[in-house]
Length: 517
Ligand code: UN1
Image (cartoon, rainbow, N blue to C red):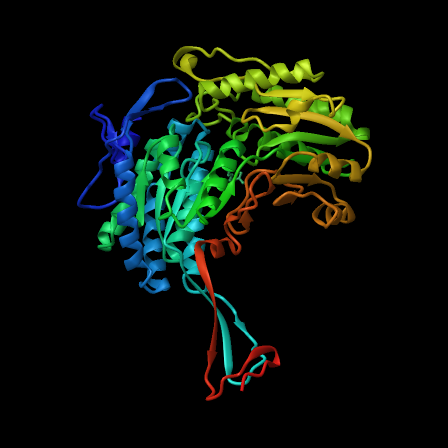
């Protein structure tokens, strides 16, 4: 931890680390209560962080407004150049920042590094956008009239991110906000402030080198109160929120109440459907990765598996064998090479895991493997460890817990007869984030991605529910929140649109043939 800290310029004195930044003059500060960052694998305290008070948030919002008023006039390709430098600075630190993600969040090393790679990738995407984004030219029905849609920056983008992706999801939002000419203010999860401080230091070094205001990438560490200060404030033009459905509902109503815009990325309860003609070893590997990656704490983790009856007995025993080969042998220190499953993020998560397993049993689910909290040896004894768990569900109507998202490695397995039935099962939850289908049948694939198919924002055929690339829009439907982030045309949410008609004739032409003379 010490070497990662010093190479990322995090103080190692033991003093609380300031978790607020909005200008070079104010420097790193914070006058709110302390927050503790812990290593989920060991339980040890990594550092304490000084959070933002209401007054700090107010100052940050004043500074972001000024930063925006300057930045919006910078030509977009010039903004892209700054992002290109940020991309380079992040890429240089990819191993250290990835290791910090592992230390603080608990995901295994390749996923910690992969998360920073995701940030680097979306920066690349934004650099490209800097020369191309914009509206269309529309054909006018009037002579010598020119109609175009103009995209201007919105203002201040508030970004509230979750613990499970402590840097990448901020990166999706920040990159698009910056390239389209906005300033942003970030409130990270209360349990991952160090990753946020380290990320912000990297971005600030580039802003400083370019003599740009620090408030283009303001940071206000804190808990629910700090988040609420952003949610309720009219000066935050777009609020991008990643987190639970319960909190997301409150956030969206509060933001709508002040006619602000919100972008929500909430729960997922993702299913994998396996048809008999599928490449079964591939399906097995994809499902195992998506259920156990990040210890089941991705929004995109596979939580439900639907097997066609004819292959179910064999597939279930292969799945149990696959779990046996991974745990306990490949569960442990998330920084060690070869580890595939790390700890849960917090003690609360362990509690929620236990509750869900108990409910599943009460409701008639049959635990095929796992189901228990684990006491590890040595250094790992203080960590948040649970057994990866498979629950066989014979009657989906009885096991109600299966319809809820539990952020833990619990996989519910059930069967179906026809593809229509499988689609119905997939859609029978509130959330609509990601679905996988395993088949070689083109017709089945088209059915699942078509109008009567899966209602998820992400559909993958012969690939896992998690692990999306940044190029396509990311997000879900229904209670997942409808918002879209990262690739595709997600950038359109970070701008205000003006439809502009320019008349270059000497006459007033009225649309729809209306006469006023
Ligand atoms: C999340 O869990 O909030 O597709 C984001 C994935 C990652 C992003 C997940 N690229 O699993």
